[in-house]
Structures are given as C-alpha cells and as structure tokens.
Length: 303
Length: 277
Figure 1 (cartoon, each protein chain N blue to C red):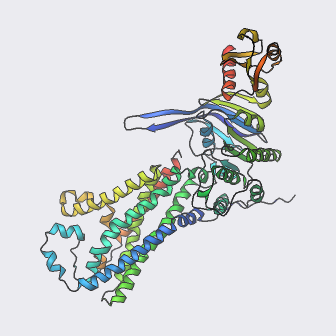
Figure 2: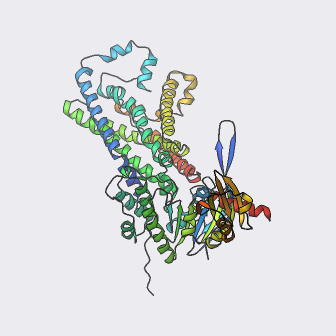
C-alpha cells in the first residue's frame, strides 16, 4: 500500500518585483511513492527541491500543478486529517525562543490533541534541558527538541528534512537506531539528506533529486552496488594513467603526484593493476554525492 | 477485540492562550501606562483646568485649530468632559493605542512566518482560519483591558480629586472605543498576513494609523475631501460627543463591528490561500 504518492507534483515560486513576476522552479513533475513501513530517502544537493516537496506534502505551500496523497488522502483537501497522523521535522528549525522546552512540548501536544504516548521514551534517548528557555539551546539541542516534537504523538508517517544536521556523531548514531526501531514498528519514514552514507545507512529506497527533477529511484542495495568507489593513489615509481585503466574504470584523473580513479561496482582488477607498482599512499572511499550524480547522468547519456 | 479510540479534540483557545502568554508583559505594562496617564490627566484638570478660563483663550484661535483638536463638536476645555477628551482620550485612543496595537499585531502572523515558527505550527492539525481567529481573540483581551484601564483611571481620578463628573460617560466612550480599536486590530492582521516580515508589517500599519488620522482631521476642515474622511475609522468614533455632550449613539459602533468582522474574514481568507515561504 502506498502511504505517500505524488503525481506530477510541480511547484514554481512566483517572485514579484515592481515590474515583473519572475518564476523560479521548485520541483517539476515529481512522481514517486512511498510504501508502508518503508524508509524512503530524498537524496540531493541543496536547492534540488527536497524541502519544496516536503512543504508541499504538509500544505505549507501549494502545488502549481499535479497532486499528492498521504494515507490515501489528498494533501490539499484533507490536510488537517493528514496532519493528525504525520510528524514533521522542518529543515530550518526555530522555536518560540523565550519559552522553555517543557512548555513548548506541552503546547504542541495540546495542538495535536493526542495523548503523547512516547514522549518520555523519546526524552530518555534525546536528552534536553526541559526547564531552560530555548534561546539558550545549542543547535544540536534544538535539533533534538525538533525530533522529539516530530515523534511524540507516535504518528504513522514521519517527514523529516535533513534531521541529523547539527547533531553530534553520538546522537546521530542514537537517531539512526531509533529510526530503525520505528521502522520495525511499521512506521513510514520520508527523510531528506544530502549525505550519501546517511541515505545508505537508513533508507530502503532512495530518490535522487537534482534541479527539481528525480534523476533515479533506486533501492539502496543497488545504489551501493552501482556507486563503486573512489580511489586516490600515488606511486613511488613512474606510472601513467593508461597503466591503471580497466573495464571497471569510470573516470581517471591525474592529480598532484597521483591519480584519482572512479571505479564501477567492482574494483578487483584496478587494485591488481595498482599492486603491480610501488604504492606510496592509497585511500579508497565511497564516492561523493557529485560522483554518484555523474554516474547516473553518464548512464543516461550512454543509453 | 476492544480497541481504545483516542480522543482527537484540540483544547479550545490553545493558540489564544499562547498569544496572550507571549505578549502578556508588554500588554500589562502598556495598560499600566494608560492607567497612570489617565490619572495624571485628571490631576492636571484638577490643578489647572479650573483656574484658567481655557475657553476664552481658545476662542482667539481660528476654527481649524479647534477642529484639529476637537472633532465634530467644539468642546469646552473648561468642563472635565471636554478637557479629558481633548487632552487625553482623543489622541491616545486615535494615535497611541492604535500604533501600539499595530506593533503587537504585525508580529502575530508575519512574525511567525519570518521566524519560521509557522512551519512547525502549521504541521499540526489546525485550520489556518482558526489560527487567525484565536490570535485575534488574544488581542481582543488586550483591547478590553486597555479600555477598562481608561475607565478605571477616570473612575479613580474623579473620585480622588472630587471632580463633579459622572464617569458613566467615560464608560460609554470606552465601550464605543472597543469596536473602534477592533477595526484597527482586524486591519493590522490583514497587513500581517499579507507581509511575511514583521517589521514591514508594523511600519506599514503605523503609517496607516497616522494617515487615517490626518485624513480625518483634514476632511473636517476641508469640505472638498469630506468623502475621504468617511474612509477613516476615526470618523466613526467620537468620544467628545459622549463624554462632553453626553450623547450616546450606537449606529457608528455597530457599523465598526461589521467592518471588523469583514476585515478579520479577509485576513483569514488571505492566510488560508497563502504560501508559507
């Protein structure tokens, strides 16, 4: 069953100046669906349209054309009903600064009109100084507070816009574990991120979005298989780029005293070729988001 | 199997409550200021109003100066109702209180959008119209408190200085001031939903207050633009008529109530349609 589905969802922002109305694209013809119990990721650089999509789903902004449904209900007509069952963690987090966290959570709780079943549990994972005014909070504390308010009414669907930004690695880890426990409970999670490893870590499927369009929707396992590796290597002996080229190679560039090799999913033969020489230094890492995009774009062109 | 059905009723007036709580200190301080100022004006009447023959002085001024200070009816400085209208109620209720309310109201919606607190608020299951109405009710409480302070100041002052004046006329004037101020509040909320920037909304709102005031004054001394004066809310609130001439008419306040309701409907409609950017 589709919990979230969009049909050619499109948003153009109108900016009015004195002389003209300018239109800028938010997203264009976005169609995707998120299944029950799935963690669905929106992966893309800043300005790709991730936030636009999420704000459309919550009826904060209205589509220029196209439509979307959450839990089978229309995002425009049944927005209030939808919001009873959806938690939201915005990308840009701001609270009423003079309020204490405790006051704020109980205010939101009353607005939700639900008894908060899991608030205490959440607060034991994401500890927040409840009795202090929010203006004294660090970025990370505010983020934790936003997470607690998003989950505390135990919604079936959670929409999160880059929820780990500002969290230290330890809390990030706790957050990922918590997400997986929510997934096990059958919650549907829609998360945006610009960090590939984060998407790989928590998501079942990922939509790669760029310039307002979905470039690909991929299962994370496949994305990982396709995404290959980046190898940065330098040698003590004389090596030319052609000595390292195999059918695994996606791209190869010489850099300061070495090479940067982008491989496909397998890197056995590349490593064999490298091992024939005297290696001074080598780093093998996951490709950057940019590299992944290049791969998908190049894939499109070659077909 | 028995299943527990959670009740999904939002506590009533939660946002009103929050609005009042947020603005409480400012509103209390401002109401105290009105109270103290009111008593001071009663004291001023007691010490100088009875000694000087103001009316004689004023007769030497040209008519338009009198219109500028007085409104429709030429008032007498010499008696308390006239003095109090001219020196206190007219400009405090025509300029200072609307300007203060402009600052309070402009932040109510535009402030939430500007500070991005609107994002989270609107992710909860609340109708946007309801948000506008509940915030309006919060300011209504402030308006009632301010007018009550205006009345209490007179009541206490008149009693303390033993001035021969029936304060019920101030009571009537304050009752009529309520729809007058509510028209302003509604208008400010319209401005607040149109602008997504609290400072711009506030500046624009205060500009409207001063513009409406001068239009009202000018239209009384310059007959060609008398039709323009009818667009100003000040045209429909005449505290001098009540407090000095002791004439109470309810037609204008009724009209102001209708206008206030129409404007608040407009504010709710615009907010409902608006993209929260």
